[in-house]
Length: 210
Image (cartoon, rainbow, N blue to C red; front, side):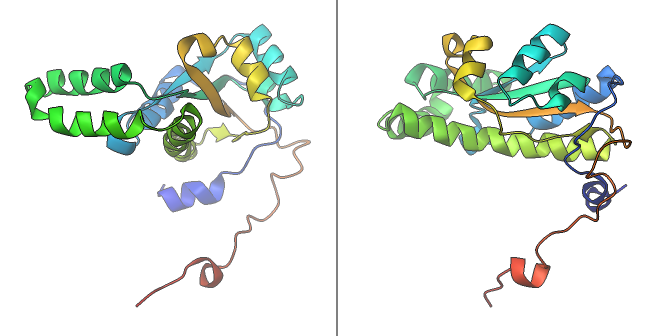
């Protein structure tokens, strides 16, 4: 199945049947997100994988009672760094250099310029920048799930402050950005499942400058 076919198959599942997604498929979805591109390769976010039923119920309570969170097999929480610091940027480059058998000097100028640029910005600006990187991985995970015929429901509808407190994210210098319940559709009772997929016509969507 091509990616286009998979994206035509997928939709924002409104009702899940509670069946378990095989762990190897969940691992593959997370791996796809892990391989997503990010600005300067910083990967300034984490993915929490949640299966605990009691915790999912608590999360649903701060996400306007969205039932997919409870009925899904695995809930992915994307959480971005709350700020860029010299320390966390240096750690990324140190790891990359070690993996590539490069000396620190190989990336020192680039890393220092990046540190000077990012640490001069406010924490709010940096969180928004990090959240954009998390969204790239979020979209990649959704696409991989579709290729594996795993249903996924992208969610922004939750109280981020309450979720951060529930998951103790601030202590980890993280802030929640999006939720992605993974599971399988329950066609009976899902009002969206049989509706035609509609998008803006390509002629209106694409602007060509020749």
